[in-house]
Image (cartoon, rainbow, N blue to C red; front, side):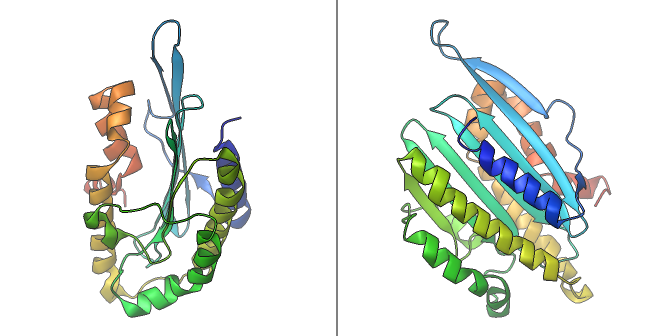
Length: 248
C-alpha cells in the first residue's frame, strides 16, 4: 500500500457516509494511465488513477493518485462546490519526491478579502489550524500570485519523515475534511445577487490552477503534452469546459 492510499480510502468512505454521493464522469482514457520510466535495469512503473464523485451541493469531488515507487507519490484531492453555494474549495496536495514531502491543505476561499466570508468559513477552522501547525511547520515562501487563493488556515509544510505523514498529516487531513463536511451540511443556497460573483470566483481559481498546475511537467514527461492538457482542462479543472457545453 502506498503512503497516500489510506488518505484516499478514508476520504471516500467518509464522503459516502456523509453525503448522497454519485459518480462524476471521468473522460475516457483518464481513469488510469501507466508509464514506465528509468533504465531497463531500474525501470519504474508510474500509474495515475483518477476518481470522481458528486453530491447535491458539490459539483465535483475528484482525486488524482500518482504511484511511482518510494520516490514519487502524489495525492491531489479537491472538492468544487456547486455554483449555487458560497462554499470554499477543499484542497489537499500531498506530494512525495526524492527530497521529501510537500504538504498543502486548505479550504480555499471564494472571497478572501470579505470579512464576513472569513468569519463564516475561516475563523471556525483557525483553532484546528493552530493545533496542526505545531507539528507541521510552515514550509516557506510560495508564489505571491498564489496567495489570494489561500486562506489564513492554509497548512503548508515540508517534511522528511514518512511517519509524520502517516500520522500528523493524516490527522490534519481528517480534521479539515470533517470540518468541510460540516460546512457543506449547513450550507444554504446563495442569494441570487451574488451568484455571478461566485461563478467568477470559481472560474478565476480554476483558470489559475489550470495554468499553473505544478504537476504539468511531471505528467508531460510521463504521458505526453496532449494527454496532459486534456487531463488538466477536461477533468482536473473542467468548469470552464462544462459551462461552454451547457452541462453546468
